[in-house]
Image 1: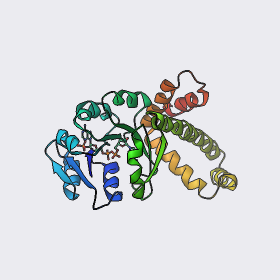
Image 2: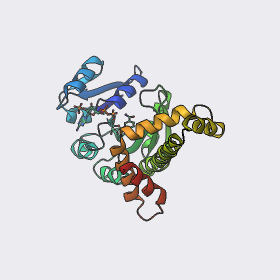
Image 3: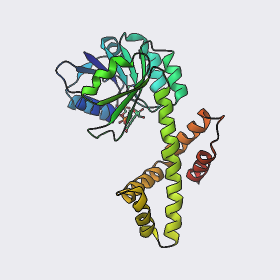
Image 4: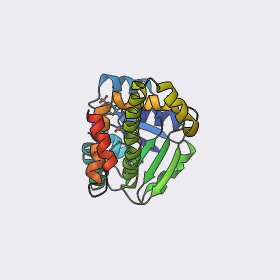
Length: 244
Ligand SMILES: NC(=O)c1ccc[n+]([C@@H]2O[C@H](COP(=O)([O-])OP(=O)(O)OC[C@H]3O[C@@H](n4cnc5c(N)ncnc54)[C@H](OP(=O)(O)O)[C@@H]3O)[C@@H](O)[C@H]2O)c1
């Protein structure tokens, strides 16, 4: 079996590491890639073809893991050249996912959840062809959500609704605690109910949010756009907080 990769960043590199089998080989291309990616591909042992069109044509499974901005363009450009499964792992909105499904025949909407460079990320998949990917469970925890394209993308939005809103609240509460000179105590009392490791997880969450507040704000805007007919009082407040 041949798995083609469009994009050779953290996600693809970890997949190559995890899906290690004599029966599966990986292919990609250097076409148009940066020096960083060219070096990473040359350092790996995967096969290199001249173009991504050839990669698509050769693949039983074609994985698109490049960037949210290029996901649709990549699908439009290369989706038609593969007869295999097309698995999109980009962090994209349900609207983009539905758009991609128009350009690709055997489309699977996927997401990797969990720390990408860990040994135990989870691959969630949906779409009517996703049973064909469940064999990957031997290498990476692979879970089917449903036969409906978009369900994984929506699930990602629901997850962000909770985590990003919670992060904004955490930032506010810890700022208040800091003002009262009770930050240590604040985390200590919360740990009693939230469990061990709460302080470390919270601080990591706060720093992560503050360090990429623009991207987090964009993700909140995406939630507001997609669920425009729902009550989003908390999400809108979180967006206001992150924009401050
Ligand atoms: N990292 C995570 O934790 C994580 C988790 C789940 C999902 N994702 C999603 O998975 C995707 C990949 O993430 P990553 O962390 O692996 O990204 P990354 O480390 O930034 O790598 C992106 C790779 O895609 C390549 N690329 C970009 N545009 C391309 C195009 N038009 N055609 C072919 N290759 C292209 C880049 O090549 P150049 O260097 O030449 O630009 C690079 O090799 C993103 O959409 C991200 O949102 C990431």
